[in-house]
Image 1: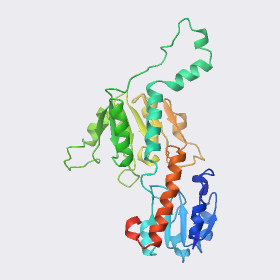
Image 2: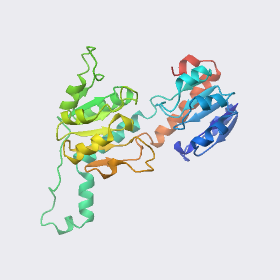
Image 3: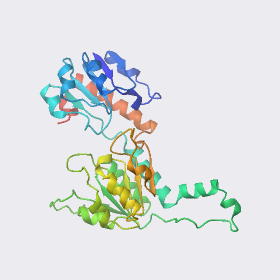
Image 4: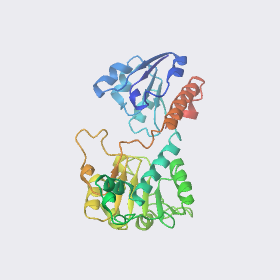
Length: 315
């Protein structure tokens, strides 16, 4: 079989992909631009893509295509209806990044709570060296114990974040779906979670229902001391509204690992926002997570070839 990897750079050069060769010929591309996709997949039976978009026109030209392996959990870059129309199986990899993302969430929550970046910058500007006392109380340092952690999206990552938060002594507020009328003793009303959270962390997929899930209305509800953490997808939080919430001190701060357009070739309004920590979509990228990702892709191909399609297919 011919396997085409469309954006191998997202997997990393430190990850060995040689095991894929046992399935047949492997064609590797570091990156693929939209204008290149059709030509590169035209004679492929399996394609592996992280963020390269596969829509109806791509499926139309890929006459031999049987399987799309998404090198991620999220698959909003694949037109699932078009895949079904062309009898192509789409498979993603679940759970590979749980530990990595949860770790990133708390790395940033702790950085905010202990004002790590502010103190580090202060020292680099010679403040401590000239201080009349042994310490500095220039920036706030707060304990996580007793604080409310609101979680939107309670899948494997949300659950792991909750487990870690409990070790710190935090109170866990699990959000129900927005506007949900379903009674669930484990979950609280969405608006109640937004209002009560000291830290609000997002772990749901980007769908039509979750696009702009957190916007002006929600920022108006939040505590002025609240910090929002988004390691899910950029479109879930309205960036313009977040910018003004930070600028007007409606909330204390934000942690953003994802934005609406990646990479931000035209910039982004959040780059000029105060009290924000921004990272380039790296929460999932630990070496261990990427090894699990490749192992998951290989497992999906093995299941596909063995006929275990219902085990792996999306939709």
